[in-house]
Length: 331
Image (cartoon, rainbow, N blue to C red):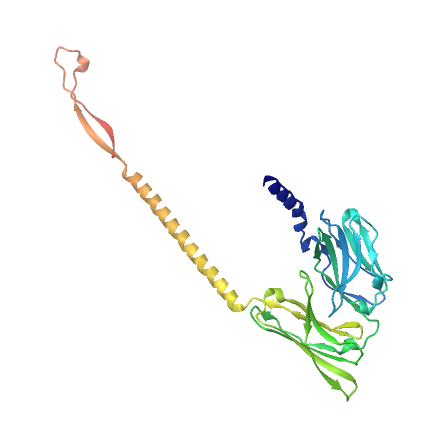
């Protein structure tokens, strides 16, 4: 039994460093990053945890599952690139520094999607927060046809209502609308959106017009950010201009907080004033006690009788009264 306990303890200690790996251990750029078609971009990633055995990169396009781009062992500089990405994707690695960055050459609109830096440790896979890469086409009229609603600042507890209107030409592939949120401190949030579409037969536009709404009830400060309406159509992704959502504390809540602060301040001032008066009263009583302890003078008359005639002449003088002071302190 003791040997079994020792074995389990050793196994727990062995697994402990692997289980402690968290998403925040993976240092990866998050949010939304825009780039133009034809450019070269590098997506940085690093992780220096001792338990890592493999590094991976995954790409997830809108509405699709993640696809493996590359994998390499921690202590190796050589990476295995999947055939679909071999021509334009490279991995920049520094095993000593835990560096595993992804470089994409000659960007294409179809490269738009979320890129995840992934690690493997003791058969446990951990994904980074992910970065959405938006590749803008060199020339696209569809981008001008996405219109998003404007929004006034909201208060905590309000409802968020965003609308998006997209006019596109029909194509063979599936056309889908998504909402993405971008903030500086949080990973991008992707929400598939239901759409209603009608055909456009008259006017300068031909094709379909689709509308989408995004609704959130009882918003909090975490819902703030820039919301983009994104269209996945014909192998490319087109973004709207974005709607900036600002969320503030409700005035009533601020008034309540300020009111409580004022009440607490008044109570504190009253308490300090009470202590001051009480201390002053004690000091005055002490001073009054000292004043009452004044010195009392008692006078005593000493009668010196005349000496007989037989004594020396210098003693022959009249009686004199000598007054002596005696101090008496009142107890």
